[in-house]
Image (cartoon, rainbow, N blue to C red; front, side, top):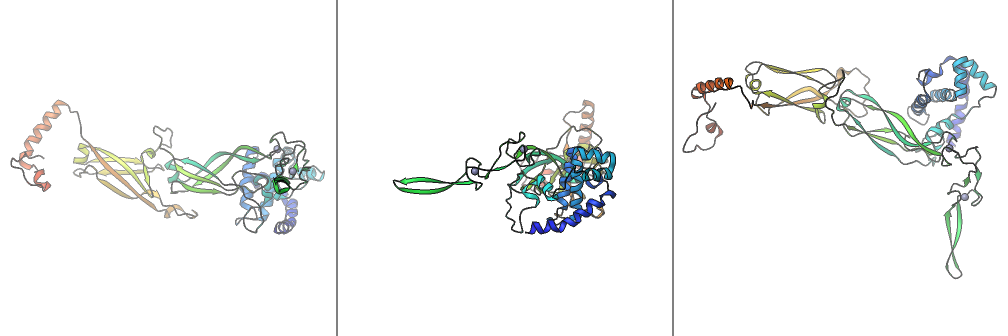
Length: 418
Ligand SMILES: [Zn+2]
Ligand SMILES: [Zn+2]
């Protein structure tokens, strides 16, 4: 009932749009280029029709009908050609000539998503919902830092386009002769002599469908569905946690008998790739993420750790440079962990819309852990000079490590060391 009322409410708008379309470019309505492929048209329609579907919170009847009309005209090679050459007038003449009849826009939508053009759930419409689908998508840490729209392709069950989901080559669907369209037959089982049990079984001739198809569609073999690839775009937002789930409504396996379930895409962090090329190169492969914070390991030479006077430029995940440095005389102990505010991951707020400028983005911390490498080979001249230097200074300024350690002194004291 609800559906009927909706459609009848929409009809005047539908007619109105048909007349006023002259003002708008069909390609622009779908947000595609004039050279768009069938696949691109489909993708655009898929996204927009779902966004504007009146069943949705983001719904907009007018826009829904607009995109459906545009898609209907452009998806048909003949009418697309006419539109390209003669524009709206040509298209209208073509329609008047009986070239194309109007479809219910929800039928076209239903062809994409199954279930007769309306989303399941709510309203008690009783439309069955198919199973949900889950996939994992690997993205490099850089995408989690910067945010990025990632295109990906999955293979799934689609409504057969050749027969438009009827399963029939000629559009003829007949009532099953065995069950008379009920989809079930009564079978009698004899339990004991003279005692019968009646059991209702699914009709084996029509598989419980109640209908039979004489000439099966050659593409889907009468199954109404085919498997095929479909391209979608996942928006990875800045700071999204790894393993985050993005929901694509009604993008699971399609079937004319039910509304497609949801596709859930889990955004996983890809293993870092070393030796990556290109201008986009950052030190990204060396950052490690933990929640809102990033970790980095920096190596210093003995001289640097001890004497200071060094600088390191880290290229961050978006290409900006973080400078680490010590002045002369500033010592870094091995294992020291330094924390830098504001250089961690952007802090993600679920459901938060990034409308305002990014001045207010908050970030976690960057933890830099230092390790110190001692030289294991020295030029012999250098070794002698260092040795002499140590000999000169160890007696005067030496530190008694044993005394400093707080342990009891042994009977024979060891030599002092610097
Ligand atoms: Zn088919
Ligand atoms: Zn049957």
